[in-house]
Image (cartoon, rainbow, N blue to C red):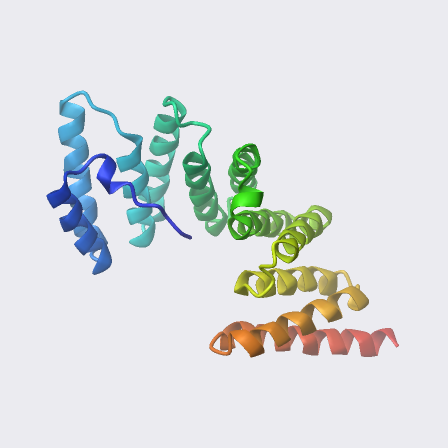
Amino acid sequence: MSHTWLLEFYLDDEETDVVSDLIDSDDFTNAISILEKKIHEMEADGVSEPEILADIAYLYYLNGDGDNASVFYEKAIASFEESEFSGSVGFGGLLQEYAVLLKAKNKHELALNYFLRTEEIFNNHWVEDSDPVCFAELLGEIADTHHNLKQDGLAIEFYARAKKILEDSEEAEQFLYAAILNNLGEIFLDLKRSDEALPLFTTALTLLENAFSDENGVIDVIKGNLVKLDSLIQKQH
């Protein structure tokens, strides 16, 4: 999960340097402490900044504290909704971050709601054209969430859309493209649609072996899927 840091919106240059150094050294606990102290100072001055809430939410996520991350994501979303930026791409990214966290906590229906809100905002801002990889990644998350909800028809639809966007934008060499091919193939494998699964797995494997040889874990997953597929084909014949 990526995040756009918004430190410069509410910190001065010196404070930004201090917090940035803590983040770069993975000292998320002290970074959180500084930003939470800053929030109290801002509240005492009657100032409300959704940006600091969003940054603290992500810091808690990085620190492995999903509960506090959720609290601050909800505060940040509510604060942005009251601002002039409630329909911005940045706000859509915040919704997507929270959805990823919710999905990791197996709150799939709630996660899907936030993912779909993100898609609506991204559609309004033509993100599919301006940043096809970002848009395809979102569609892949939506597809995976539908799959987790056992809505395989919708999962296939969203994976197919993500696949086409990457192909049409000439971004098919992206690691994301191979992952989408594999995930789509896994659904077809589960549905025993071997003829559709085979080309997806073989293309993904070739892509990774040629361009991402260091991604051995994913390569092993795809090879395992091909073994399962071969066993299925043997049974079907």
